[in-house]
Image (cartoon, rainbow, N blue to C red):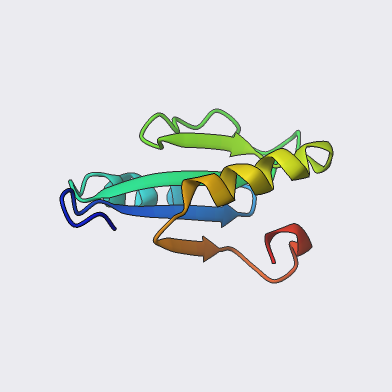
Length: 94
């Protein structure tokens, strides 16, 4: 958090997204003192919630194994104040 501009940067390392999760995160994004970033697992092809509006995130990107180094660098460069992780069963997030 910057003392001049007290913005809290939150990075979400998340599982496949569902509409109810996005709704909760959108509500959080309405706060003026937060910036949200997310790396999330891709959903199944037949998932009913594939087209989600993630425009309220500063950065929203899908995890891809072949891009792990770049995603790691992104996470480190963000230097977030808080990291929220979906679950222990995503080893890259650990």
